[in-house]
Image (cartoon, rainbow, N blue to C red; front, side, top):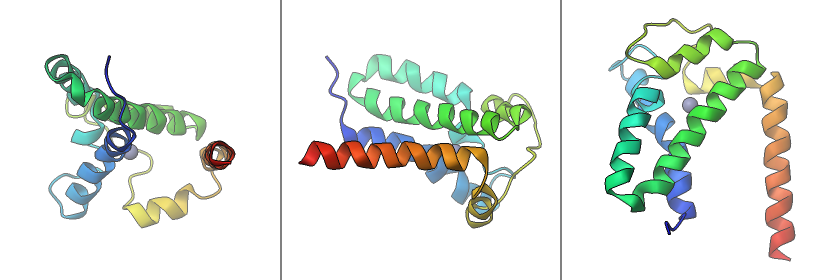
Length: 132
Ligand SMILES: [Zn+2]
Protein backbone atom coordinates (compact mmCIF):
# COMPACT_ATOMS: atom_id res chain seq x y z
CA UNK A 1 0.00 0.00 0.00
CA UNK A 2 1.30 3.44 -0.97
CA UNK A 3 1.35 6.14 1.69
CA UNK A 4 -0.42 9.19 0.23
CA UNK A 5 1.70 11.79 1.96
CA UNK A 6 -0.11 15.15 2.04
CA UNK A 7 3.13 17.18 1.68
CA UNK A 8 4.08 15.17 -1.43
CA UNK A 9 0.56 15.57 -2.88
CA UNK A 10 0.77 19.33 -2.36
CA UNK A 11 4.30 19.48 -3.77
CA UNK A 12 3.16 17.55 -6.84
CA UNK A 13 0.16 19.84 -7.29
CA UNK A 14 2.44 22.89 -7.22
CA UNK A 15 5.17 21.35 -9.37
CA UNK A 16 3.89 22.32 -12.86
CA UNK A 17 3.67 26.02 -12.00
CA UNK A 18 6.92 25.96 -10.02
CA UNK A 19 8.67 24.67 -13.15
CA UNK A 20 6.89 26.47 -15.97
CA UNK A 21 6.16 29.96 -14.63
CA UNK A 22 9.79 30.82 -13.74
CA UNK A 23 11.03 29.22 -16.98
CA UNK A 24 8.73 31.49 -19.00
CA UNK A 25 9.47 34.55 -16.86
CA UNK A 26 13.21 34.29 -17.53
CA UNK A 27 12.66 33.47 -21.21
CA UNK A 28 13.72 29.79 -21.30
CA UNK A 29 10.37 28.94 -22.94
CA UNK A 30 7.74 31.10 -24.62
CA UNK A 31 4.67 29.70 -22.82
CA UNK A 32 3.59 29.69 -19.19
CA UNK A 33 2.41 26.09 -19.60
CA UNK A 34 5.10 23.90 -21.12
CA UNK A 35 7.15 20.99 -19.75
CA UNK A 36 5.54 20.86 -16.31
CA UNK A 37 2.09 20.89 -17.88
CA UNK A 38 2.85 18.28 -20.56
CA UNK A 39 0.77 15.12 -20.57
CA UNK A 40 3.68 13.45 -22.32
CA UNK A 41 5.96 14.09 -19.34
CA UNK A 42 3.19 13.04 -16.98
CA UNK A 43 3.14 9.66 -18.74
CA UNK A 44 6.92 9.41 -18.32
CA UNK A 45 6.39 10.23 -14.65
CA UNK A 46 3.85 7.43 -14.43
CA UNK A 47 6.50 5.00 -15.68
CA UNK A 48 8.86 6.28 -12.98
CA UNK A 49 6.18 5.74 -10.34
CA UNK A 50 6.09 2.08 -11.41
CA UNK A 51 9.72 1.83 -10.32
CA UNK A 52 9.55 4.17 -7.32
CA UNK A 53 6.14 3.69 -5.72
CA UNK A 54 6.91 6.19 -2.95
CA UNK A 55 6.66 8.96 -5.56
CA UNK A 56 2.99 8.12 -6.24
CA UNK A 57 1.58 11.07 -4.22
CA UNK A 58 3.88 13.49 -6.07
CA UNK A 59 2.62 12.11 -9.40
CA UNK A 60 -1.03 12.24 -8.24
CA UNK A 61 -0.64 15.89 -7.22
CA UNK A 62 1.00 16.65 -10.58
CA UNK A 63 -1.81 14.87 -12.46
CA UNK A 64 -4.47 16.71 -10.44
CA UNK A 65 -2.90 20.05 -11.40
CA UNK A 66 -3.10 19.23 -15.12
CA UNK A 67 -6.67 17.94 -14.76
CA UNK A 68 -7.81 21.05 -12.90
CA UNK A 69 -6.02 23.42 -15.31
CA UNK A 70 -7.85 21.69 -18.18
CA UNK A 71 -11.15 21.85 -16.25
CA UNK A 72 -10.78 25.59 -15.62
CA UNK A 73 -10.12 26.18 -19.33
CA UNK A 74 -13.25 24.23 -20.25
CA UNK A 75 -15.28 26.13 -17.68
CA UNK A 76 -13.99 29.44 -19.01
CA UNK A 77 -14.83 28.54 -22.62
CA UNK A 78 -11.23 27.95 -23.72
CA UNK A 79 -11.49 24.33 -24.87
CA UNK A 80 -8.84 24.83 -27.57
CA UNK A 81 -6.29 25.76 -24.93
CA UNK A 82 -6.36 22.21 -23.57
CA UNK A 83 -3.79 21.57 -26.28
CA UNK A 84 -1.26 22.75 -23.69
CA UNK A 85 -1.28 19.11 -22.58
CA UNK A 86 0.38 18.09 -25.86
CA UNK A 87 3.46 20.28 -25.39
CA UNK A 88 5.96 19.93 -27.15
CA UNK A 89 4.33 17.63 -29.72
CA UNK A 90 1.76 20.26 -30.75
CA UNK A 91 2.56 23.94 -31.02
CA UNK A 92 -0.35 25.97 -29.75
CA UNK A 93 -0.79 29.65 -29.00
CA UNK A 94 -3.18 29.89 -26.06
CA UNK A 95 -5.95 32.48 -25.94
CA UNK A 96 -4.60 33.55 -22.55
CA UNK A 97 -0.87 33.32 -21.84
CA UNK A 98 -0.01 35.82 -19.14
CA UNK A 99 2.61 36.07 -16.41
CA UNK A 100 1.32 35.01 -12.96
CA UNK A 101 0.12 38.37 -11.59
CA UNK A 102 -1.51 39.46 -14.86
CA UNK A 103 -3.11 36.02 -15.13
CA UNK A 104 -4.49 36.27 -11.60
CA UNK A 105 -6.06 39.64 -12.44
CA UNK A 106 -7.55 38.14 -15.60
CA UNK A 107 -8.78 35.06 -13.69
CA UNK A 108 -10.72 37.04 -11.07
CA UNK A 109 -14.40 36.97 -11.90
CA UNK A 110 -14.24 34.14 -14.45
CA UNK A 111 -16.62 31.17 -14.01
CA UNK A 112 -13.79 28.90 -12.87
CA UNK A 113 -12.71 31.50 -10.31
CA UNK A 114 -16.11 31.20 -8.64
CA UNK A 115 -16.03 27.39 -8.90
CA UNK A 116 -12.58 27.38 -7.32
CA UNK A 117 -13.77 29.78 -4.62
CA UNK A 118 -16.54 27.32 -3.69
CA UNK A 119 -14.13 24.36 -3.67
CA UNK A 120 -11.65 26.19 -1.40
CA UNK A 121 -14.52 27.26 0.85
CA UNK A 122 -15.76 23.68 1.17
CA UNK A 123 -12.23 22.47 1.85
CA UNK A 124 -11.80 25.10 4.54
CA UNK A 125 -15.11 24.09 6.08
CA UNK A 126 -14.11 20.39 6.11
CA UNK A 127 -10.71 21.18 7.64
CA UNK A 128 -12.25 23.38 10.35
CA UNK A 129 -15.02 20.88 11.08
CA UNK A 130 -12.46 18.06 11.19
CA UNK A 131 -10.36 19.97 13.71
CA UNK A 132 -13.24 20.42 16.17
ZN1 LIG B 1 -0.97 25.17 -14.13
